[in-house]
Image (cartoon, rainbow, N blue to C red; front, side):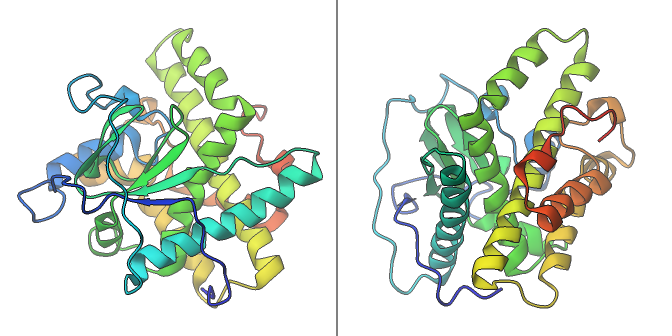
Length: 285
C-alpha cells in the first residue's frame, strides 16, 4: 500500500498515555473476551448495546489527548489512512452539494470514555455515533495478524475505512433508521438481519474508499485487495462463531458471513458508487 505522499489527518486523538488499563494484565486481549465481543459486535456501529453504560466513565468525562509522536509509524499510518478517507468522502459529498464533516479517530489503550459508554480494547475497533468518533486500540492489529491470519497494511486500512463507513451511515440517517427497525422487529432474528445489512453496507463503503483513493493516488499494490478480502473473511459471523464454539448459528448473525462481507467490499471497490451499496433494498445480501 503506497501512502508516502498522503497527507496525515489532523483529526486524530492520541489517548494512549492517558492512563487507560490494558486488558489481560498487560498481555493484550484475552481469548474469551475478544471472541465473545467479536461475535456480538465486531466493527459494530452501536457499541452501546454491549458496553456497560453508566458503569464505566461518564460520557461527559474527557481523556487527555497527546500529540502523535514523530517516531510512531503505526499512528502515522492511521493518520494517513484517515486522511485518505477524508479526501475520498470530501469529493463524494461535494459532488452532491454537501460538505463532509469528518469524524475524529481516537487511539487508546485498554479502555477510554466515549459518548456510548466505556470503550474497551476487547470490543475491537468501533464507531460511536454519540460523539462521531472512531475508536481503536492498535493492539487489535496484532490480533488480526496472529489470531485471525489477516496481516497487512491494506487489511489494517480496511478496518479504519469500515468504521468511517459507519460514520457515513450516521450522517445519512441510516443508523437511526436501522436502530428503529431493530426495535420494532418481530423477533431477534429479524432484528439481527437489519444489523447485518448495516454492516455489509459499511463494508461496501470501505470498498468505495479504496476505489476512489486508488484512482486518485494509486495507493494499491500487488496483494492489497487479497489482504482486505482475508480480513473480511476472517471476521465473518460464520468464521467467528465456528472459531468460538465449533458451529455457526445463522439467526444470530449480526455482521454477515465471510462471503457476504467479501462480496460487498468488492462491489464497492469495483464500482465506487454509493448507490450500488444499498444493502437494504435487495432481496438477498
